[in-house]
Length: 276
Image 1 (cartoon, one colour):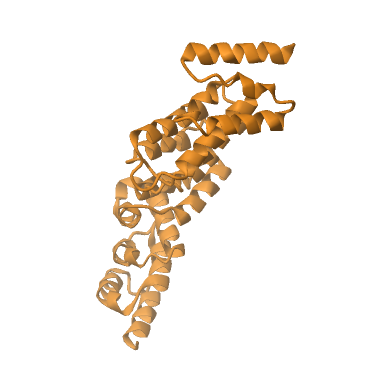
Image 2: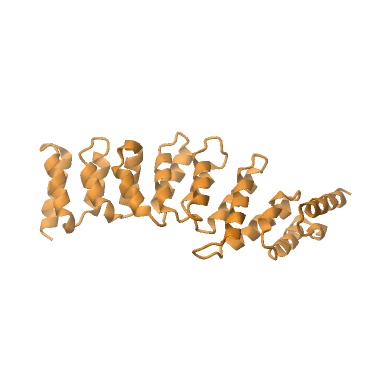
């Protein structure tokens, strides 16, 4: 009787919303069959994400997975209807009534797009990552690092110092792996930007060093004179500097106290590069 009532309710909601009738899929004899039938049905729709509002959890999960498949095959210029689908999944993931497991599933479905949708979707995910009250911040951070928006490296760097250790760790990993347009520029500008604070700028330096980002060398040479960044800038230069960077290295060395450990380290590096 419970399933009959649920089928009737779902069919009523679908008809009221002007959606195709999915009630037949709920006739499956178990959860696996209902999920399979729902997924088969939803794959045929233009917008399977609409069914994340369904009463049946198997239909909801099938709607997320059908949307994931659609997002994974969008190419470099996603059409407006696919962006609407991604926004629907985000709405679902941010709804306080959505169970955590389904919210996480929806977030990672969005990541399959590997697209920031012009920065609009990545900006919404960044808001979730920053929100201390959002229960799935770690997953939001992981998704943010996969959306091909290099400018969000600054967001991740700010979160490296978060008081929640899981959030901080996820942000550090994301900062080391994030790709996308503008990522190198964001690193360079972030290290140079004093308004970001030493903790964020140092996180960018450390991540750039792990990424072997040689483009960071000039700005690292500039900020090595700042006490709060000296050690991380020094490590970046020792690992990444090349012979072509000698001018910047000599200039940086000249600005450091003669008897400092950093000056001694740069002098050794300069001598080594001059012999190459």
